[in-house]
Image 1 (cartoon, one colour):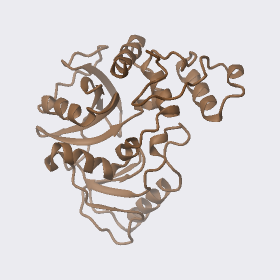
Image 2 (cartoon, one colour):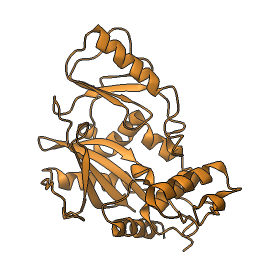
Image 3 (cartoon, helix red, strand yellow):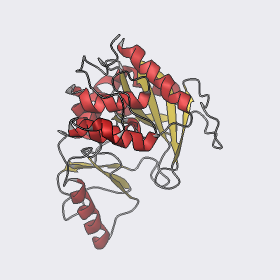
Image 4 (cartoon, helix red, strand yellow):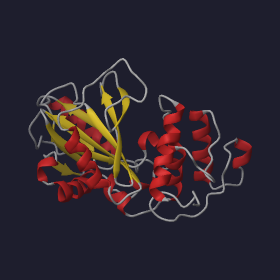
Length: 291
């Protein structure tokens, strides 16, 4: 198998096997930028000519995979429609409001979470009705989210054509802390790993488990599996069945599962795993899914 024909369609060769600055001369700017950033974060050269690591395949997807469905998956409004059509409306967090600029008068009840439609990690948690000054601050923040296309500086192409906007949803659980996030890795329609994110918005940390809830690298935190884990795994496979790899995120609220979002570029392929062998193991699963 030609490993350059990766992701979800046959893609062109990327002529880059090393990431030293001297070796990137003459390459297109995006390839040079990706190679140098990868080398800086991982302390090793990026091999796109013969990728074996999960993090390398993420970079290859950023540079080469242009499947149109990716834009739909990164659009928080379109992703809800997509997930609702496959799973049913009970899985979807209701949308309280959507639009471009938040209006001068508050248009939805609280507690709520306000998010950018077109990006990641752009949100404001509002646990009670804000006063005028706080609301104006939230409006200014939401406007800043829309000034630039998200993902450009990390070359995350799928965000490029997502319509810019803002959405508001009920705050799941009704109060802080934010609920635990269960991020399920799906390769070729098979849910294989669950990354559990704890302490979001505070002391954020994450632990990667296999499908049987064994921690790949033992951690101090030992979160139990959520009551709806089996349903989440089935739902993730139903949503990701047409792709070589996608991560599907969920929440469990009092035993009820909710769809969160899709992710095509976990950590932008720049966050090291807790152990190096995990990068290779997940890379092998991705390559197997496209072979």
